Image (tube, rainbow, N blue to C red; front, side, top):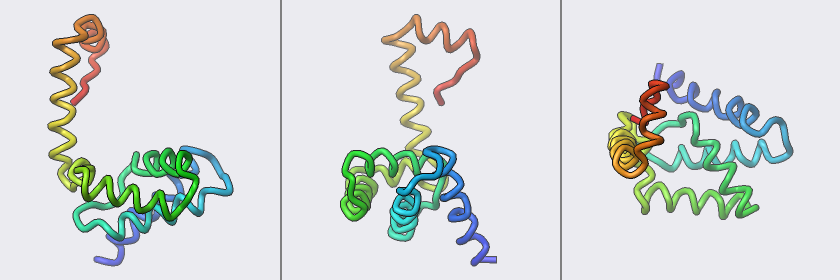
Length: 121
């Protein structure tokens, strides 16, 4: 059962990459970076949206190795790892803060979000 748990997140990686950017020459590079990142982080598994971060940073840096190390730095040293923790506690708190800020400083946007039942948290 443990092996199945380890394989399931990685089964989604290539699918998500292709869904985000289509089939390109960089798909394998992006997949390698995501796999290495997940393998280097103890408290998180792959989740949707992670590939988007990798793709954008790789597009900017243009180098697989630099992209991996920059992502590892962001996750471990800049607190991004807590945003992707299993219970997403830091992400939930961040969304509540954004919710409060929009309500306070962008009330017209807040009113539209309420009309369409869109919650930021």
